[in-house]
Length: 141
Image 1 (tube, one colour):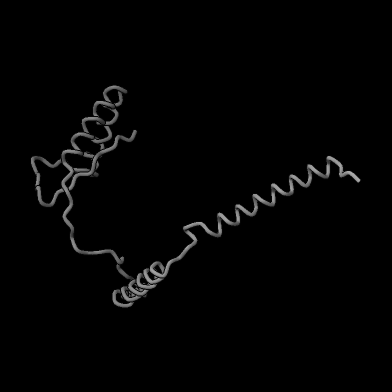
Image 2: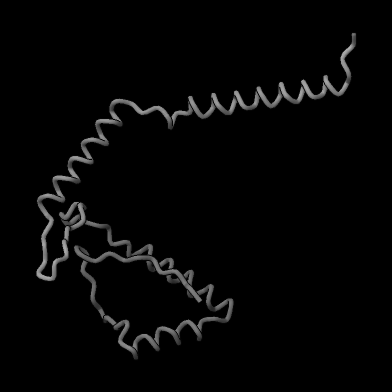
């Protein structure tokens, strides 16, 4: 007895679905992110232990009943590069872009307003190579 075409198509679809499910299962099960090595386990335990010790040492109870704990960052000051050259280049690019788009006056108006409100202040001829760090400016309008 010959099987119908409907049965053959259905069987083919079932085989494809079954094989795809298998591949998805294999892909998920054996994905590199799912392998936790002994080193990873130990690192996680060490970090957890260090965080708990930090909490035990630095936790304080204030007068109003709140508990305060400092963040577990490295508190030693590090030396940053000044990045002044980069900041100056980006400032020139932003200024040229504002001139081209015709937004320079509106942009300068925002800074003038901030100066009047005391949000920012002008610093003249101050530069300390050892302690200054400049963040490149981005125009936002």
